[in-house]
Figure 1 (cartoon, rainbow, N blue to C red):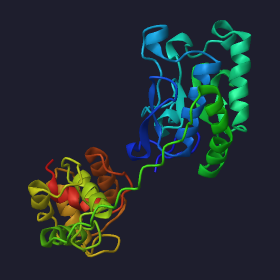
Figure 2: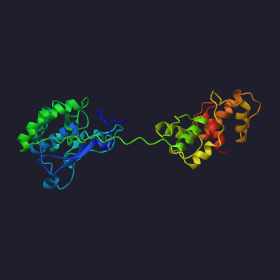
Figure 3: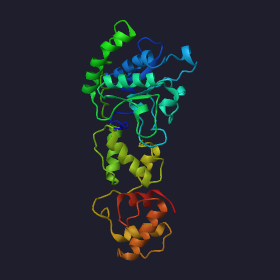
Figure 4: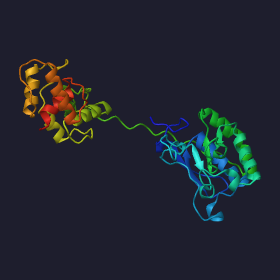
Length: 312
C-alpha cells in the first residue's frame, strides 16, 4: 500500500469521487468519505469568506484542483493530492512559494485562519507552512483519521449552511464494491507453477496465478534473460524446460564438475576437476557479474537457470 505524506492511501481511484462545492459551479475530485467532504465544506466557506473560486466569474482559468497522482513538487514523497486529501483553490492567483501577504488581504488571511480553526486543526492551510508557503492549498493535517474528520465535518456543516444558504448535506459515501470473484484454478497454471518450483523458483501449486507465482516467474525470467513481465508464456515455458530440476541445497544437488562444465561451455577458463575451490568461485562470480546477476559466488538457482538458458 502506498500512502501520501499525511498517511492516507494514495493512487487509488476507488477512494475518490467528483463532488460539487456548495454555492459554486466548481467540482473537485477528493476522497469520497469524511476527509474529502470536509475539504469540500471548507472550499464552500473559502468561496464566500476568502475569495470567489468560480473561475469563469473571476479570472477565466479553471484552477481549482483536487486529486492528482504525483509527488510533492520538488520532492519524492507522494503529495496529499494523491490520496484525495488536499485541494488547491485559485491556484494561478497564488503561486507556490509566494508569501500570502502578497496576494491576500489581511481580512482574507483572517478568514482563512477562521475556517481552519473551526475544523479543530484537522485541516491545514498551506499559507501557514513554516517553510515554502502555499496559499492556494488546503489539506487534511497529519495524524488524522476518519473519526476526527467526521467530527470536524459535523462541527463545520452548520456554519456552511449559515454562510452558503440552504441546507448542505454531505453526500453519503459510495458503497464498497463487491470483491471480484476468485479466478478458477487452471491445470496449465498449475503445471507452470510446478515447473517454476522444479527449477528452483518456488510458488504455491494451486492453479491460480497470483502475486507469489508472478514473483517467482519474474525472478526466473530475470535469471534466464527473458522479458520480465511475470507472465508464463511460450518463451518462458521453453526456457523452463531447458533447466534441469533443482534438488535444493547449496548447489541444486549437482556435483561441482557439472557446474564447472557449464561455465566452461560458456567460454570461461576453468578446470573441470570436481573441486569447488577459490578459482571456481572466482569464475562463477565473474559469470554472475557478466550476466547481471547478484554477485555472491553461490551456486544458486538463478545462476543455474542462467547457465542453461543463456549463451556466451
